[in-house]
Image 1 (cartoon, rainbow, N blue to C red):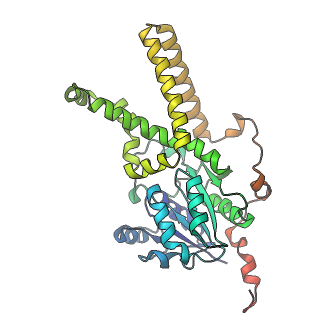
Image 2 (image 1 turned 120 degrees about the vertical axis):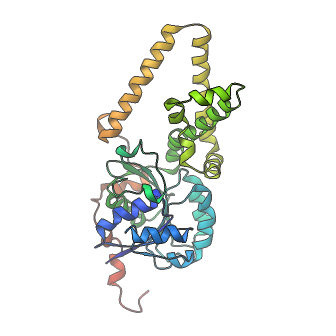
Image 3 (image 1 turned 90 degrees about the vertical axis):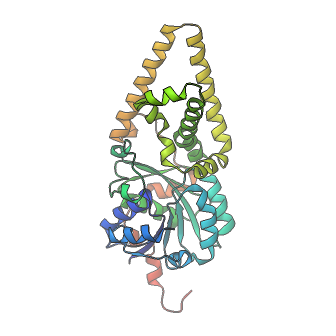
Length: 336
């Protein structure tokens, strides 16, 4: 059977999912929605999705899978708006940077027998230097050679987890099972902290009396460090930080300690220590780039235990999405 997937939000992430799924139109049927009807029409014209709906509740009524590929600050209201139209046994997924909060919202808003599974993509390493965003930045291989963390609340149905894993594979990526708190801790370092650092640098430098001269000389290093400010709307980043406060404060304190230590080396004129630390960080970054490009993490980390609720799913061979809803077809008309 064909699985119906609704993608809400047709920016780079959502549209790239649609393009990747287009290669599997024998298994899935895609419908798209975007708050901009113009973007939705353009996405359909470009083959991102097979059909579109400008009516948000109607767009999810028949969906087996609903993907919220929208800014974090829009997730709660969107969930609230569509909750009563989500069909029984449907799986709602999101791609936001904070998972515990979204899981709480899903538990609060979704009716019984609807499932929530969070997705956190790590993109194709070939895309890491690409600064483009939005529909025009969409590409079918955005998730290839990467991993996507799959998270869900305790007690989530095995079928919902299996569905999420198969969905990830169809995108060309690998599922990485983790719990909600684990992903939130990781994203505080990998996503939220860079945004804060970029904001702090801009606030510090533009407040300097000499900014009128600094701005003329600011070049590639300044642009690279402040780049995260271009990738996310301020409200979305602020909301994500506030809903992941504990982890953000923890990693921010560690960063401030590191800065204080570097400051001490400079104040003490300890050139040897400063040079050694800069060389060490350069090596670490080069190592990360090599590992990220290869995407083979098994050679650089010890085996991690299977997450209790996901163990059965991880032992299964990932198959086609059509197998996941097969039991529906076996029911005779009138059967519950």
